[in-house]
Amino acid sequence: DQQVKQNSPSLSVQEGRISILNCDYTNSMFDYFLWYKKYPAEGPTFLISISSIKDKNEDGRFTVFLNKSAKHLSLHIVPSQPGDSAVYFCAATSGAGGFKTIFGAGTRLFVKA
Amino acid sequence: NAGVMQNPRHLVRRRGQEARLRCSPMKGHSHVYWYRQLPEEGLKFMVYLQKENIIDESGMPKERFSAEFPKEGPSILRIQQVVRGDSAAYFCASSPPKGGPQHFGDGTRLSIL
Image 1 (cartoon, one colour):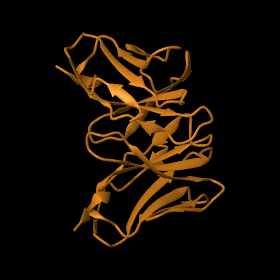
Image 2 (cartoon, rainbow over the protein chains, first blue to last red):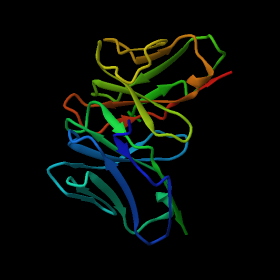
Image 3 (tube, chains in turn orange, green):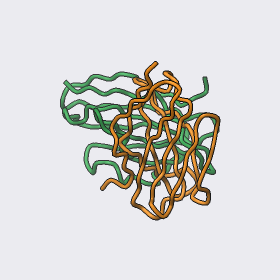
Image 4 (cartoon, rainbow over the protein chains, first blue to last red):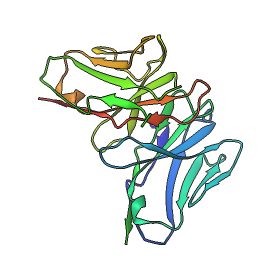
C-alpha cells in the first residue's frame, strides 16, 4: 500500500520560474513531513520539514505547504535554478521526524537554463 | 566529513553468496535505518535499529535478510543466498536519540551476477 504518493514522475521548469512538487498521503497518523533531494549516485539530502501543527514552513527559496484536511503537501522552489535539478522525495512519519519514515516514489525535477 | 558512512559503495556477488553491507552512523546518532531502492522506484523502509536492538523490522523480507547494530562497530545488513532480485541500492540513514530528520549515506549498490 502506498501511504505516500507523488503522482508526477517528472517536472520540467524554466530557470527563474517556480517549481511546485506535490505529495499526497493516506495515513492520518502522520504528523511530520519531510522533503529530501537526491542527486545521482548520492544519498538523499534533507531539505525542509513541516510539523502537522503548521501549514507552512519557509527556508530561503524553499517553502512547504501542508493541507491536513486534504492530506496534501507541496514543495515550492522559487526561483528555480539549474542546480535544483534532482529527484525530490516526499516523506512522512509519526513521531517528530525520526523513527519509521515512509517515502514517496519521487519526482524528477528538470530546471532548464 | 562526519556524515553517515556506508561501505562498500559497490558490491558484486554471484547468486547464492552472502552480501554484507556496513553503515557507520553520524557521530552522536543512535538510531539507524536501512532502505532499499529498486531502479526507478522510491526508498522502501526495511528496518530501524538502536544500539543492540531491532525496533521495527516490518519492511524486512522474512527470509535471508538480517540486520544488527552492535554496541561497538557499524550496523550490518546481511543478505544470505543472494538472488538476482536483490540487486538494488541499499541506503542507510541515522538520526539523533530524540528524533529529527534522518541523514543518509551515499548507499551501497549491490549487483548480483
